[in-house]
Image 1: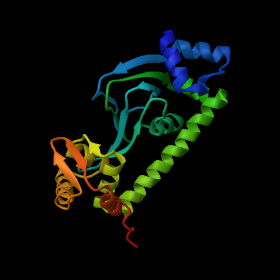
Image 2: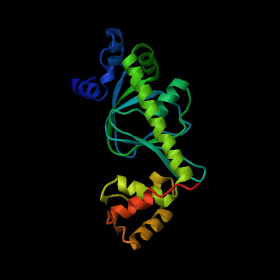
Image 3: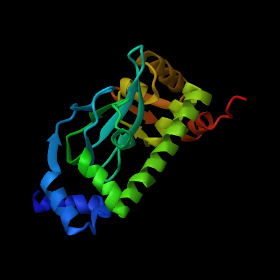
Image 4: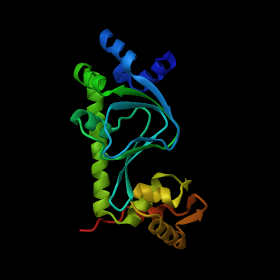
Length: 224
């Protein structure tokens, strides 16, 4: 593994520091540096889980597909973060229950299953970080379940737009994918927002005109 890759890896994943000499030698020998272009399918639902990726650059979209073909985005993995689905599959020796796709060109160091298990067992800082990130991701997924179960789609769309800033460069399909909906419904809601003077719609761009009004929609009381 090149020194420049090692430097990036230890900067983003400081919990790797302090490994025993023998463990580091195995890591240096077995961990592999990979690059993948945007759009690459990194893992498929029901596919085997054989390695743990440590992202150095780029991002990965993790989504669950329904029987109707629609996808619900579960979370994104950014540099220095952990994919809890991969962690749980490796620990439980199970197949992937979701799909992971490179959103942009990415680089990562990939740790094979046996080495990942040894790191968990023998290097407590790594183990602590993996389980901390696991807890954080689980909390995010519980929030997603709550939003889908109890919040109306217009509330979720308003909240998503507010989270992206005053000028949102995104397609209606991208928003639908993030919200687990379909483009036609999202387009109708956006047209409704535009008719109320809340947003201005352009090609692959949404300009927020009334942040306060959108926030009222996003924070509307949940149904009892």
